[in-house]
Image (tube, rainbow, N blue to C red):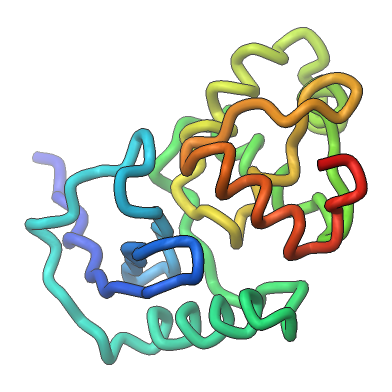
Length: 168
């Protein structure tokens, strides 16, 4: 008999780019989604817990990020919701430094899957921890802004916030 994992807990965060749902479990932060974001699970069954320590930390660090006072997040993360390949991609995203971007093909090479660019793109799109796992820093060939589950307008705004607006 397989034991079911306990449901994550959730809270809301009002970001300058729109309302967000944050989720955490016993392993760490497991979700950060803009309302209406593609691939967002339905969190209605998850209990609300605005006092959860990881969610409080995430809210504080996101507020600092949006205020231009934070470039690196220091939170426990649970990337276990994805396949092994997705988790590898998401760990690769974490390595993209604030103030930089990388192309899908370059990220595929970095994670040791140079022929898996399309699969990598799909995994980037299913990243459950927006902003903190910085999928917005992945761009198309030549720096083209392509794909973002939260919308290209938000991707543009996040890159501008990180002072990457020279190409936008």
